[in-house]
Amino acid sequence: MREAVIVAGLRTPVGRRKGSLANTRPDELAALLLNELMDRAGVAKDETDDIILGCVTQSGEQGGNVARTASLIAGFPVTVPGVTIDRQCGSSQQAVHFASQAIISGDMDVVIAGGVESMTREAMFSNMHAAKPSAKLTSQYEIINQGLSAERIASKWKLSREALDQFAYDSHQKAMRAIEEGRFAEEVVPVSVIDQEGNTKLFSVDEGPRPESTLEALAGLKTVFDEQGAITAGNASQMSDGASAVLLMSRDKAEALGVQPIARIVARTVVGSDPTLMLTGPIEATRQVLEKAGLTIEDMDRYEVNEAFAPVPLAWLAETGANLEKLNVNGGAIALGHPLGATGTKLLVSLMHELKHSGGRYGLLAICEGMGMANATVIEML
Image (cartoon, rainbow, N blue to C red):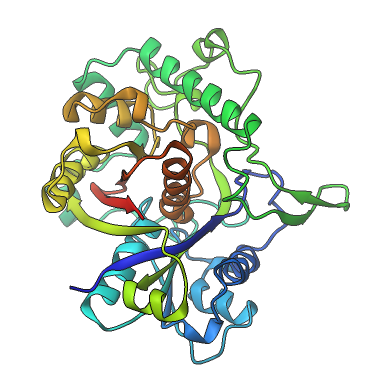
């Protein structure tokens, strides 16, 4: 049976909204990363069968199939195609799934999967033109925003404001410790940027983590979606800019090219979930992907569960029986940011590097998605 393996994985540092990447076009940012990915892998661009990028707000500079435009900017041969997909927050994780499926089926041998999102230059929902949901949809389901979904999850799982703020505080602490220890250095591609004063500088460190964050400061923030609720800007993910990508191959092709695989895709799944609660999908996706892999949650050495809102990984922990000490050990989206279309492969790249550093074998990645979906992936380090 053919195997899909990852031979390289990189990401840009994540910029805060209106931060260091504010003056960088997303198509050019993705192109920079694609170039560096192939250079570090030592693989010729013309070996690539397809480029699949996730992007949620496909308008403006990241509209018109940004996977294709980025590949052309990066100097890939015109014969290398590209496609852009939207599975909401799991878009680039879905890109990995599509790429691995193409490889395992025998249709392709070398595929780039990744994502890009500039939440500064292309505002969230700008591609929807203020469209209201269909009455035929709202007659069947209660359609609410994700913040209200997070409030309902907190209520259903009896997660207090204090517990959410503690989780957020810990995310910042873990992220700052990881940066201080250089744990992201190998996975991050520095980006030459122009700052607000017109000066050129090298941006190389995630700028989301807040050293000044304290439990007292988090407790003082007002709730955003429900006056009597628990969700604040402090215990939710940050709007961010960034790009990420991995290079996948069949194991046979990697051997033929003399490229050393880093990890293999063991199992993958995507599920639909309640579109009102919306963010609970990772629970069922985890159950399904572990069953497909023939493994248990105890077999996983590390897991990355996207911190869209603090209640999401906390509810996931409660339902899966997972070990908090293995979860998002270097911080998550609350501290490091959530560049929507890029988050899936960003977390996958970080998961691979963390497994490498810790000597772990298996890793799990799960991401909740808008309108009630989730992807989950199990990888094995090689």
